[in-house]
Length: 156
Ligand code: ZN
Image 1 (cartoon, protein in one colour):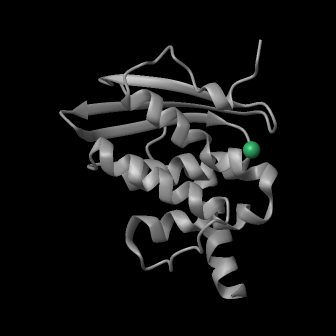
Image 2: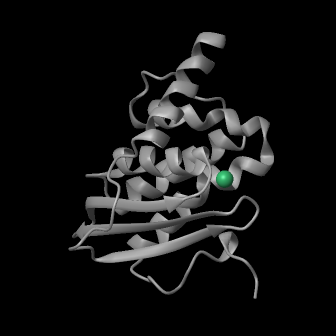
């Protein structure tokens, strides 16, 4: 178990230090911002949809290591997937980081890699750090860049 925790820790540190798919996406078809006032995390996610498929996805974010690593891992997990597959993955991810289901082993494909964030299930206040980018991605795919991320935003 501690080996697994060390692996997860190193994955998070790596993605925080060298985030993948980082920076605006020039030919995006949608983008959305998310804010997590509890921690001060901010993320913007851009997507380029080709039909139902996520052809490319980028993000820019400031905030804690969890929020940045989660956004980075997300971009590597969803590229090439359909909007429906992304929704399924987002639901599975939420179930893992809230501790509703056990984390799959690291060898278990995209979800196995995303399980690096499963440690936040022990820290409920950090769950939003981990799910923030997924909320923004959902809004970006929906093509409603100004709709925001209602449950991740500060109330006026
Ligand atoms: Zn955070």
